[in-house]
Length: 625
Image (cartoon, rainbow, N blue to C red; front, side, top):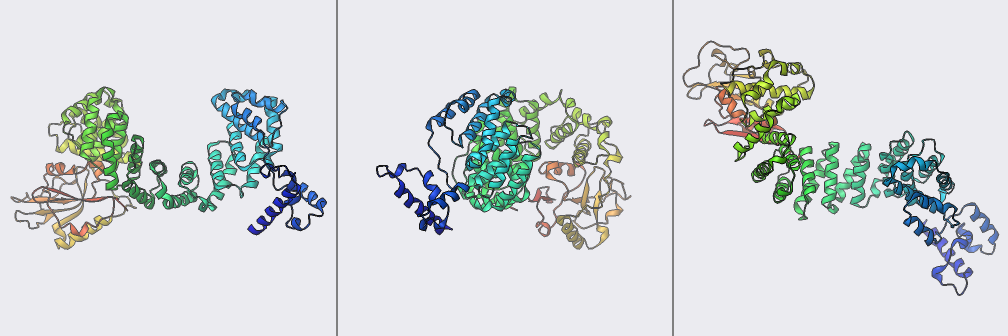
């Protein structure tokens, strides 16, 4: 095909040199007349002696059409500031090229974008209808780039669905779809996705997505891949997979803006593409380009939303944010703290600076911002150095407004204060009274069940850590552990823990598994040890902590109960918060051989304690999995 194209061009130049006047410079040759004799057949070079047949063939199919020079019209279109100035060009005696009506319509759409109220009156203008008809009659001669912009302009003008001109342009796009460049297809997909027209734009969009997916290897720059991912990636699962692969291939070309757009797009769609996240994280750490405040906030949000914890990235984000903290608003501080809380990343200098910043601008801090900060601190179990001043501000703002908040938010805030050991009796009373928690007892949705689980923790805090609290409390029926769901699966950590303890205990009466307590917790395992650390028969002795107390013998002198659990999610308890409640419940946390179950699955946490009371947490979060 390349050889045939070169042969035709050679014939064209030969005919142009023969027919052109001797005094005319070559750079000013007009090839329109020559095209009729040179670009019709491969045999033209050898049949120039019979020009009649060549002319007849070219008139049937004009292959090459040059763009005539009309600088005056181009300048008038570009300088027009009112729709009327463009419409006057139709009857002003100007020589219009076949591309000019489409360009006029595109320029008209841009002018109407500033005054959208003029669209309805313009659609009734006879000159506007004449312009549409002119565009439709010459649509086959409009250039590719102009055609795709023309279709977007027609969508923006909100023409009727039955418009023949709109149908004509859409059909022309379908005919040319294979010849359009990939950027043109991406541009059209964005225009169709933004249009709410039914069903024409959606049918065309489906065809565009198919072509985009088939031709994804034509993407050769990161900007096109990122833009297409943002605008059309959510419309097709298979296309999004292809775009992720292409971004992974071109990630070395990305700058901070491209990285931000990709990460925010993945976060908005909830797509945790681990290979792409790893690659972006690597380049984000290795490349020393500066990150602006908006980029830092968006990156922090995306990593938190996707729960992708990468230590070096989190450290860089925290380090770069610290000097920019004075310029952050309270809303941005709350958003940033919330993102780091989802990442389970506590940077002490940064969070201390958060508290200092909030206290300095206390008059600008609203209750929603304070609530977000409080929940973030609770998830990380962070208690600032100036905790007295900070929590005084919290109680001052939260006191009169707590009852007016949504029930789920009330529970979240009181739970956060329980984790941080700053809750007051009035706040406990507000969420534990029967009229408040009754609608949650029969909750079935995951959100309501999570809220009720926090209520169980609040109830346990009131019983174990606030002996002066006189009630009310949750009813015994609500605190009793519910039977496990039929489809509930045992985690690898729980399974390995049970197998290890059974082999260690040797006898079934020395330990219990799946122990239901009156506090709403279910312990994975429990044993009873005497003063010398030897196992005792567990079921023979008094166990007041059980949901159904059993046993009659008092505990021997020096005997201690030792629980082990992997079911306390740190996001509901705060990091290492169960320690104080365990001690208040008269348990003696003791260490167990933990090497056997340290190889636990991600998102699980094993709580163990040493004989001296020091807590050891075996955590395996999704750092790079």
